[in-house]
Length: 109
Image 1 (cartoon, rainbow, N blue to C red):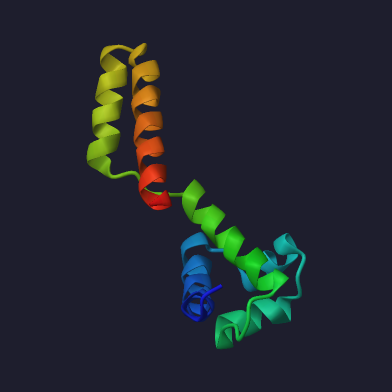
Image 2 (tube, rainbow, N blue to C red):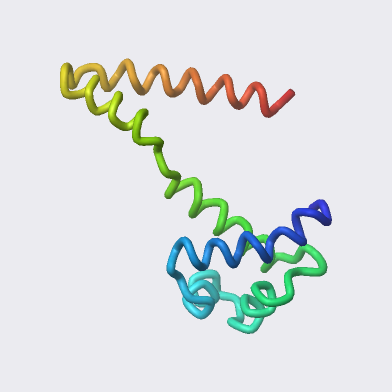
């Protein structure tokens, strides 16, 4: 893991705690790591990548993937399309799968 990512974990963790409303203690219990490790990460950051820093990082990434904010214009358009014809769901899902595969190709380059 790059040093910049290790240093950024402190800021990402603190942002996550604010955004999610989760306490350090709850996060520690959820991840089955000590509360002092979560507190140390939050207060001082990490000096190296360990299995517990990876657990914290992966949990934060998953949270933001599951709780991504959909821009209101996109949400309104999709709702309008589905209201006009609920069968359009299949077409929307197909289009999103195509877009997803294109973004994976870009990341792989």
